Amino acid sequence: MPKAKSSVARKKRHKKVLSMAKGFRGGRRRLFKSANETVMRALAFSYRDRRRRKGDFRRLWILRIGAAARSHGMKYSEFISGLEKNDVALNRKVLSQIAIFDPAAFEKLTQFAATVKA
Image 1 (cartoon, rainbow, N blue to C red):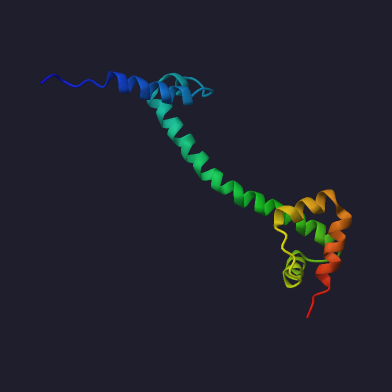
Image 2: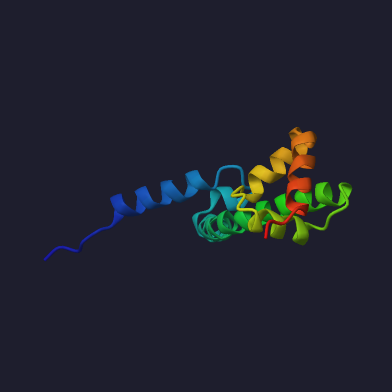
């Protein structure tokens, strides 16, 4: 039985990895072995950071809401708690955008959150 060669599959795999290594410097772009290591590492980081980005944005929104709430004399936790008790269903992304682009509406929200319904 003849020896099976993997030349076509190997060439395709190498081309795929080297095309993903565009923009890297030196041998990391040209040499398959170092390019493969770098590409695998980059893919691992991008997978991890796609998940991390969600937490980063949530932290940013909370920071912005807290700063806006403090400017109206209220703590972040009091503000969120007041909104939840008054059945206001706005997420942190929307609250952050309101705080930036419509400060008057955000002030009304802080006043509304301060008056907790019984």
